Image 1 (cartoon, rainbow, N blue to C red):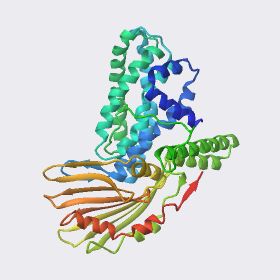
Image 2: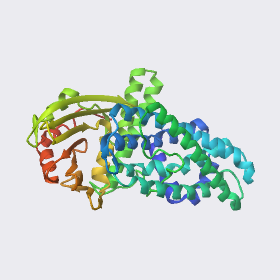
Image 3: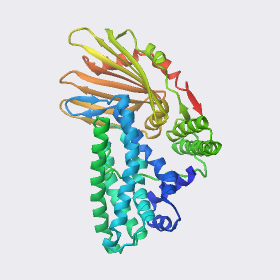
Image 4: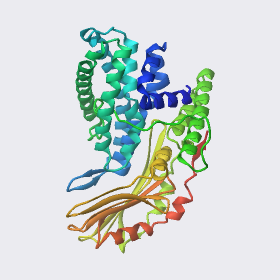
Length: 424
């Protein structure tokens, strides 16, 4: 697998699709080659980001607050979403192939898979935007518009349909993709038994700025420099996977895949999250003047990703309680680091009942939400681009929740940010 080639193709199809589609159409390829060298790599990003948003950051439910899906259910859903996304892409490609004669085109299953896969590129690249609360809908809308544009440009070139029929071909394809997406969502919901977010296959094509390749140089500390480092880690990890596959050593193959997952997520390699006994001590005996009444800790793993979480409830036994949650994002720390350090994202909304905002302060990503009517809210901070510390509950004001978070040993967590990291 050539990571530089994947990034270069993604950049070209997003920034110069008119010149890139003819190149794609003329390339000799196979279905297995398209999947192994492109689709299977990029299609994992939305599933991973969906897990990060649903299980770690939480889904904002109007009037009810933020809801987080359990880690086990979230991981199960992510794996299922990824697998069914691979299936869905192929099903849509079959439909595109079958429709070709109807719109004056030529049937060719490989070309159909090309046009579907590369039209989805924008969604895969831009999916990281979904990790920021409040931007999911905007990304989906932009994705639908840009996806229609890419598909409309690509169908005449790959499927040889007359340009004047490409609009109708595009519309029918999108309708078919919506149907496929709905069916697959029902499968995911029935198997995983949880609510899903941003998983419609047809409506989730999204535009994005292109990614630079690994040639040239960027200023130290810039986003470009970090991207170059990521590209090099991916290249090294792919070589390890190739070597492990040739060796036939099952253990070496499993380890190489874990390293690859770490490289994809930008974490620098496979990350072993903290054991429950290591993370529990960071839950203090008292919080905001309230005694601890419940405590739990767990570590879960799937797809080569480990996540650890410790939670505690603090209550006066009457009306006031606080919920503290500390999450070690493990290999997902690369995505957390992207949100905290690369993107520089900010989001803020306010209404009559309160406000919600996400911002950076002192190099840390912070999310706070406050309802001035119910005197309830939450305050969270990302520590060391790896650990999420969040306090939610009732308080006199948001400053009490901030104080509760600051009473946690954040410096101690920061000191563990490199623990368990296995560099490539």
